[in-house]
Length: 311
Length: 112
Image (cartoon, rainbow over all chains, first blue to last red; front, side, top):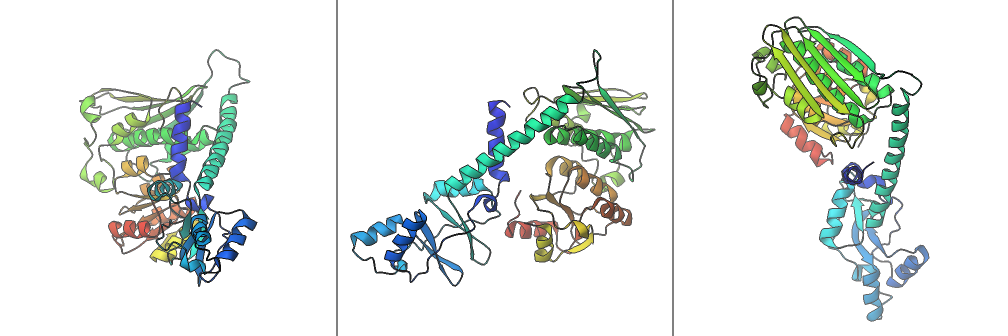
């Protein structure tokens, strides 16, 4: 894994990981009437530096070590925490990403954020430490999964002796058969998953194959063939049909350009994004076409992340 | 949040895949253009669309989506429902517009 993909992965995790995944659920709380003295003992016994103040299940405030220092200075340790607690509260939702929590920590400079549900009930608490721990754990898991996958994928070909070994998967794509449309792509995807190819690679292949398959379903004159070739270093896709051919390939690759008839557009196809989508996810794409003879599309996606696109 | 909870909160009608509502929803996506959904929706997302034909099921299973919400009470084709049932893909319908559905989902904490 290169350092840039690691950074990329960590950033992605900040949005994938939810606050509910990393927050502390068993929160130590006090009531507004708890004396500051008892709050101090609670902090000492539990080695915490602050706690939410809860009244009838609802969050009423937050009291921390700074508040305790004020109480000590004022020699008012028998006062209730309600007298010293902060009531201007910044809270987060457990369904929000941890990235959002980090943003809030930076904006508010508080050391802990209470996590509340829609009714304002306290469901947990989160500190920057919890975020760090959660991200590190998730990164470790992701790294381990990645290792296992790469091991499996790289060993498919190990015991086969040849100068060049590849696995060829061939699918027939019938014309205008919208009931079968997507079958080739979903079977190809299933196969790649079984081979242990990384899900991010599989996703990119699926986008390419689905768009190529739909192009044959919608635009060809007699249907066509979709061929996936898996080698130890790359997956290439070949989509071939026997006509009608594309008169202007450059124009056909422009996002939004489409020749699909209205009834096909009404189904949500023919947005003119097919070739543009393929081009954006494939590491390499090439289209050749002869009017009256047919179209051939090849696309390559490298298995080694340092050669390919991040997504 | 589990899909079953979303179904309850938004009062959605379950048309297929009721055995697969226990899935965790990772986010949402809204579009009626299939190419956009194919490229834009992520695994575990809930897709809101007006389209109710068989190819929606193909995209949703290829993208491993949590489910599809068909808005504005648009009819879902019988073959599409049968296929969704087979694929354990929840198909949910509502009279709300796509805009309303997206707003409600956002409100209860479903993000991109």
